[in-house]
Length: 258
Image (cartoon, rainbow, N blue to C red; front, side, top):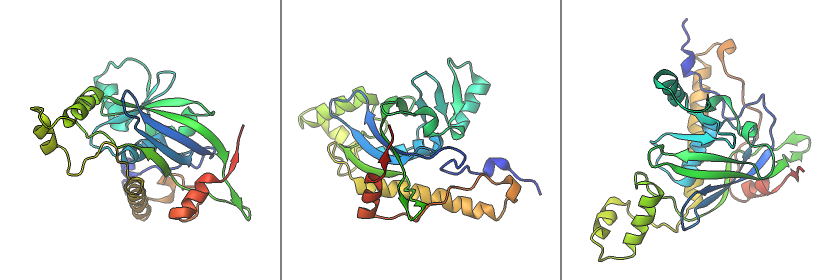
């Protein structure tokens, strides 16, 4: 039987890497109004999956490329983009497949930062900052390992294809003046109920949970088709997801590392 290894999805969390609890803040760069998200997640999350989670956490639609840039200038990009650059280059600077790297590989200590870019055309850059590092809690000898979790946020996400930060700021100014000749054009283009000051943490969390469930469902179905020696490393054992106050308590717990 011929196995197409391109079909094998890597696990969301890399079980071969150390796991710590990272408290993070994601901020959209260059806007007059602060747009941010607060996140807790394991340090061994692969950058490829983290990037998908950030799309849903912010509220982007997700049909544009997205990538990370380290403080050393190294770019972490999708497998398809890396292959394009390999074939059609030249591309200045070093770049890597972000499937092969974890968050803990690029952020190691409190205060470390990495840039995340959504839409390489409009170039919405975000700063991801490691604010705290904790050990995971142990309950009766079992490590409690919560999944990616959104804990807060300020203001809504710009719409896709608005023209970058300049286009977004221009749109917000136009929307303040119903007499502006562009006012109705923007109103017709924007989704119904658009509010630049509204961030719904429940909706953002549901988008992330749905994405994770989809990935894990595909992986489980593939296990029946792929021989054991061809399978990716299994995910680290963790408890079932818990909603509401239990998730909040899990996010708040743990011992800080210095």
